[in-house]
Image (cartoon, rainbow, N blue to C red):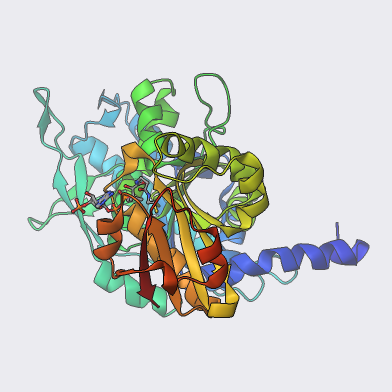
Length: 439
Ligand SMILES: CC(C)(COP(=O)(O)OP(=O)(O)OC[C@H]1O[C@@H](n2cnc3c(N)ncnc32)[C@H](O)[C@@H]1OP(=O)(O)O)[C@@H](O)C(=O)NCCC(=O)NCCS
């Protein structure tokens, strides 16, 4: 479809992408793909998609694999591949094959990025692909009594050289080969180079564009978005097939090493990298290193969870009894802390505008998550909310947590210091202590 066939749709689509363009400009993406992608003839299209990312100001580092190309070279020489636990054992002949495969792939990739015919996605692109001895490697060594010979592991990535190249608008290409200070060449796994590069460059994303379809769990449900914690559980369950597990493990490793998001997308889906980056739901699996924990304002959907959290404390008298109806009515006063969809902390801010004061009430952190600073985070957040709303003082009424508040800048006060309306509501039976903090 041409844009002018449906201009309204085109414009609304382009606008919907704007937030992502703003968010990703200047960010570093490491994009890794297996040799199978080249065999499948998907390289020209990948070059189109990546040149678009590049044009939008994203700093792109490419990592290519070469397994089928190495196999082809070995077959030509009538040499059998040797593997141990999925890792190739590289002898002299296999290394020659790996070097030849990498050399050829590098030229093909450079050619793909040199496209620029008018009326194609790469017209005026003029992207320069830079590669070099950016990966320092060491030998894998002997595992289970088996010498892996010239198979290596990435030891260091020359990030201090790569950053200026990216800053100057170059696209950096890394092959699955590394060099040692002894002058040797080692054959590496593409996934290993990708994770090492993403980590060393402090990339914002690592994207594997793979030959495997979208990853599913034991029940057949698609795994779309997981935290590293959940990813660990998936790996432990050993339900993924070998290829999926390999990518999943590498992506998880990257996320655990601080890469905020690692994606696995299938190249069989046309434009998968663009869909993954520029649409909310994406088309692949995303492993997120971020603590999925968030502090946010409550909505009506949270009422059940808030009740669940505070009911035991209402029952033992720590908190005043409120009940569902009241919470439903006052839910806008609440902030909550959520982790992976579960609410485990809340607090409410009740305004007394006439006196420029606000009450913090109902501060609760679920018993199994206490003493990790979340109570304090909620307090800080409510202080910020109160300040933003123009309040000068924050007060609490508490029977059992006075010391917690004293330690956090509150001072003992009396009922007379409370706003008039609040004085009238004071429950003389509870005999709560009044503590006030100047904001
Ligand atoms: C008070 C409360 C919200 C603190 O939440 P939290 O996430 O554990 O708080 P933090 O991690 O920021 O602070 C933990 C510290 O407070 C201390 N603390 C916890 N409850 C306390 C109390 N009632 N009095 C004094 N200190 C307390 C802990 O011992 C810990 O001290 P440490 O850091 O020296 O080890 C939580 O304990 C709670 O939900 N309590 C029950 C409800 C309640 O009393 N709310 C206040 C009603 S107004």
